[in-house]
Length: 310
Image (cartoon, rainbow, N blue to C red; front, side):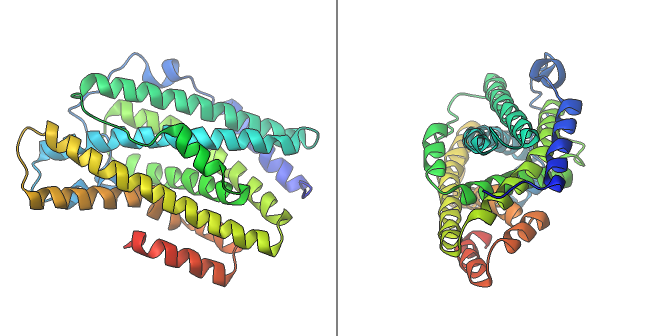
């Protein structure tokens, strides 16, 4: 196993320092006895793409943002199930080694468990204010079992991708939007603050794993990453039409078959943007992936992403 350098130890230590300084509590700091105000948007148009549906009235666009925001929260709760499990597994490498790295990973895992609890609370709060019938179809344990069946390099790549796009979403779309639900915006703000440290640990552990693999193992790891991205896309292809069907049921008016087809196309495109494309285009992730793959491997990844990127 690759030894941790003094520079790496200092980066783990910085994550610990920030984790202690920004530590927050779900009830005291985030929810604060509030309920959701459904007269506000949950997701901005830069993420929801509701502006690409010209036949929706303003109130309907807001309602579709509520449905998408609900799934956005549930998706983060979903992925944090396997992220926490993988970090617990990786911590074994540091049990009798660098204790600073171990503490950083233990804190990371503790925060991921808290985030899962937060998003479960959010689902319950949103459910209280929306009509019955919403379904979140992917099962966290089934998804985690699939992801954790892939090699550590690929799981860390996917994890880094997720935590970097969550940063980009907040900075580029969520923070500057004045019309968002104050509670929903606070949830994503506090989540963002801790995820920014997690992305640093992801990078350190991904590079450490990369250094110990031979060329054949790295090539197989790229195949695993491609399979994981395909798995994510499969989840989106399942959830997007379910969300559109729910939206059309609660919108209070009929939709033509052409309108329904447009809604399904736009929502799937929005979900692909949120969970795959925005991360693939995030400069820090692109640079890290480029460092750890050959030109031929990048070409394979590009070919796999091409239908999704469109």
